[in-house]
Image 1 (tube, rainbow, N blue to C red):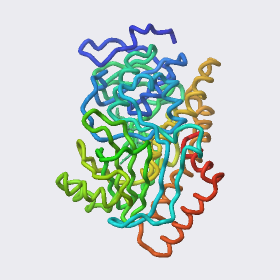
Image 2: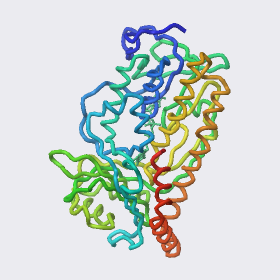
Image 3: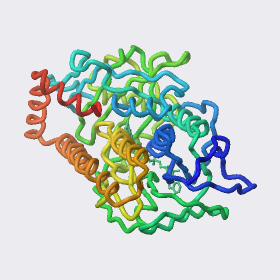
Image 4: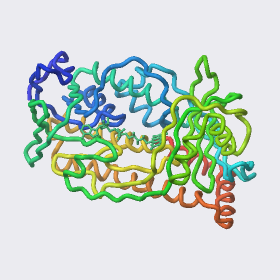
Length: 417
Ligand SMILES: Cc1cc2nc3c(=O)[nH]c(=O)nc-3n(C[C@H](O)[C@H](O)[C@H](O)COP(=O)(O)OP(=O)(O)OC[C@H]3O[C@@H](n4cnc5c(N)ncnc54)[C@H](O)[C@@H]3O)c2cc1C
């Protein structure tokens, strides 16, 4: 395949239907995982095409939409190496303390608790990044990284054989790729077209996600408060002129009930949030921006590969947001995949060869299944009102708190290091 010039790479789907050059890797889905992978591989010298059904304009900072990601240290390093992190238009907020408590709405948290502090790690546990800021940085990086061809909005029909993959766009253009990466999210069309079985574990819970302003500063501290109907998380965010003290919340409650809470008027919603904090350290709360609701389920693909195809991110696995690890798990896939593909490329070998596919699955799937099992067990242990389980988990929480080595081990794993 011949090298392509940077100018030829920023071809957005247009009325001219310019020719698209063949690539090493075609990524379907430019979500946070697919887009970052595209930039990382192109920076390493591979030719990459990215197809997304949504438009990906390098846009101005849109309004706060209330959603944010907790990005762990390992994924942050990956975003730096992909050239994305430095393009974030707003400062991220470091998470320097995490308080884990157990209780019931309207009651103070149990006196047995677990606290991760600055002493447990040499750097922050993670960074809170607004979803809109990450989107802006990803779109900008995609459009400015030489070697990335952005095809959006576009839909692709893929034909894969042992020799090659052929990508046919709905506007008539077509090109070849050595490898197809499915980064097309939970409902991955490529996964179902490949006939890869999917197992789904519904939780009967829906998450309410939004931003809140509060009376007192959060001091870069996060809270995970376990309640019988589901976990309630408060995650520190960078404030604005209008709201100097802000946090994101992810409040999981029973299906049907969560939607009713989410629809409450601001004042009543704020009081329900305060009832779920387990303490009063943030003072009075005011909701900011839109409220989102997501039905929660875990899911996993029976395998991550098929002929010249790899699944990454939510296309391969989805987990309960109890530990804020969903996106971090997707980044772990591409943290393993990028050096593997760049190494194969440097040796002039085929990135879609069966041995490469097998290596990727062996690197990622077992560890991802462990994380899925851990978050599933956590939710089942904590989301109930059984007094015996409550005592057991309180003792467990307090037990971990008393052993610094155990706390550090927990933290290292959650930080993706
Ligand atoms: C309530 C909630 C809170 C969460 N909080 C956190 C958190 O704090 N931290 C964290 O790490 N994770 C969190 N997550 C998980 C996180 O949102 C996901 O893991 C993450 O969005 C997955 O990224 P992705 O790139 O794999 O897929 P997606 O973000 O789903 O992106 C898929 C992309 O593919 C495109 N696409 C889909 N189909 C096609 C097609 N046929 N052709 C072309 N393009 C297509 C879409 O337009 C989209 O751009 C949370 C999830 C929920 C539900």
